[in-house]
Image 1 (cartoon, rainbow, N blue to C red):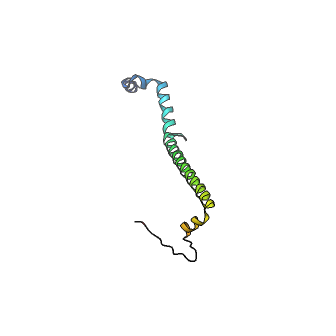
Image 2: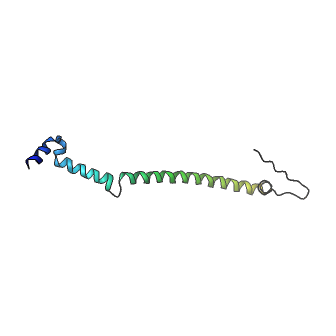
Image 3: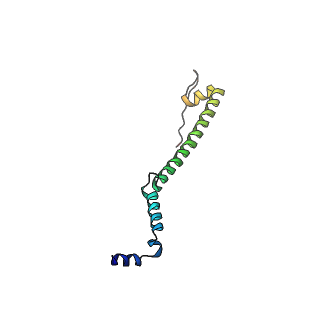
Length: 99
């Protein structure tokens, strides 16, 4: 028992305090072993950020599709000529590919 007491006396003061030790154990439990530990929270936050970026991307694509639909409704002939290469009987269509 005497050697155990000597080892405890060699420890710094805060480590000998049982309340500090209990708080340290609780903190370790919460940070590393809990269901909502730091690593899990980091992964969840990264997923939320990715989903928010995806939401912004798809919102932008929806707006572009709506604008394209309005443009198509306004000028159906131009849309058909540009997208599907449709032509009238007496016309020739030339496709120019830019490199």
